Amino acid sequence: MLRDIYLPQVIVGAPGYNGNWELIMMEAAMGISIFLDDHESYDVAMVRFLDRAAAYIYLESDGDMPHTAAVDAKWLKTNGDIIEFWNNQSIFNVSGLSQETCRDFEHTGYGLAAMSHVAETSRIQGRDLYKEDTGSRLRYGLEFHSKYTLGALQPEWLCNNETLSTYLGPATEIGFNALPHRLGYAMPSTEELTEKQRPSGALLFYGWETLTHLRN
Image 1 (cartoon, rainbow, N blue to C red):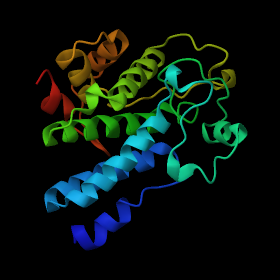
Image 2 (image 1 turned 90 degrees about the vertical axis):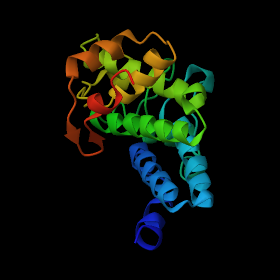
Image 3 (image 1 turned 45 degrees about the vertical axis):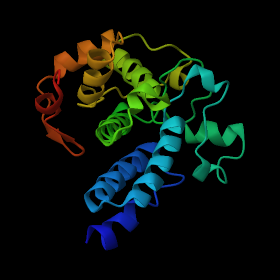
Image 4 (image 1 turned 180 degrees about the vertical axis):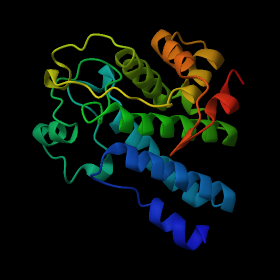
């Protein structure tokens, strides 16, 4: 069932869709691949995940425009295409901005949570993504969105000054445990939001993550 039905559905990803889709699909593909001991499928899912994660959270080192995932290149041919895909965000100048920030924080939270879930899985498999580009993007993404969820004043350049939808959901616990607790990064907004939301329960892609990842 997993090999013949579910894995083919998720490992193909979701080109052209909002990025949380593909991040979650690659999380599922990796979990199935590990269960099946399917190294080839795991590697395929990892390559696609890394490319999508880089295209989901902007870092200032990306330059004037965010990274575009290889699978989206045939749709996102111009800066205008990229801006539209980023829900009409046209100014890229602060690390942590997400492709879905201007859509809403809830879906952004799904993507951030999937990034942390994959990083945890990869760490168990012997590769610590928290110490790579994915970890940097996750760190800045969590801190950026936690700050505005807590009520920071929205700058005019962000989402064309349209009102933000700032319900992030219980997306921070796993990344917070890894990045400040294990690796020592200062993430004050993420810390405040995580502690405010504890204990986190179960919702869609989340499952009692205070229980599983509080200072472990």
